Length: 209
Image 1 (cartoon, rainbow, N blue to C red):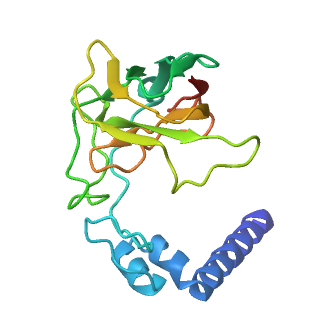
Image 2 (image 1 turned 45 degrees about the horizontal axis):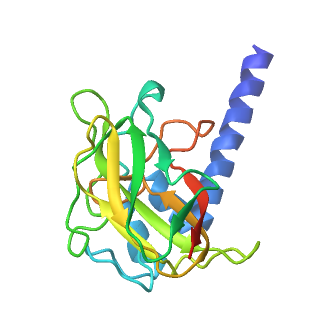
């Protein structure tokens, strides 16, 4: 009986502590009470409106449907090859293999950006699309995310898991190409567990004269 009383006292203290922490931080309290709209009101940032607000914003869109671990998105760039090369100023075709992403679902990024939850198809696969982004590298300097040599959303359906995109880089140098897997309204795909392989791929390649 004494053990039960001790456990009740400990549980009561834990609840009280949790309530105190939440009361001290209205943002945590907003999440706890599932009031995402109130969270954004309290954040001080502009409210999301379906457009790409470059100064930053707060989105109350729920995360949505998340696949099971056997249906997590995975991607592999097959061309250019890592460490390979292409010719400056000449068209080349980027080739991307994608697994567990139902491609061809691509909203208008001007008016429907981050405004719908992630959705799964009848087979439990995320409905969405991919992108490729190419950036010039300068030694070990981390590239600025705002600067890129080429960017394109891959809004077509994959052909047997293969996505392709013609690109052209006019300036010689070392470049990085990465994929960006997204759900329908362009937010990055959400996976069910933290410990996993990456859903995207990056390679380095040379652009030669």
